[in-house]
Image 1 (cartoon, rainbow, N blue to C red):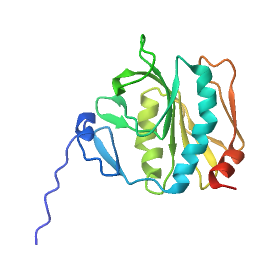
Image 2 (cartoon, rainbow, N blue to C red; image 1 turned 120 degrees about the horizontal axis):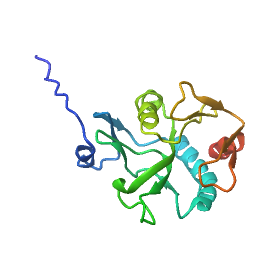
Image 3 (spheres, rainbow, N blue to C red; image 1 turned 90 degrees about the vertical axis):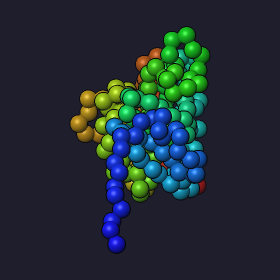
Length: 190
């Protein structure tokens, strides 16, 4: 029996939006389709813990910036659409909030919580995309190792944080200090 033809194509954000709502997460980076199954509960609990910690701080950045949670689409270029687990963004001038992906003016922070099936993409193509697009900070949260890898646009290596993560985005009156051991304990229910 012959092998089926492999049809490679260049995926665009509009193509990805037309895919079925079947419980998978569909993204594209540099024209490559990324498909991720629904997250495990440890992933969900970690996202929730970071959301709670960041939400109160993000209020201090309003009305200029807000905290958003996946499954909101972010288009960083014409061949890439991602859905960070969490992100802080500013809307285009004149808007009070982001209603469509094209309303994103400035991505201050993107956070991806690692899953066994996403680590390669989160640390590789997505990281490269976020850095190339000038995302101020990209945090890769490894809930198994209980650490955060912090990337900035010009970094060649991440900053590895296990204790306190201090984030002071532009426009913040004071910085946010996250106690990572406490956050991971909260996420694990310990």
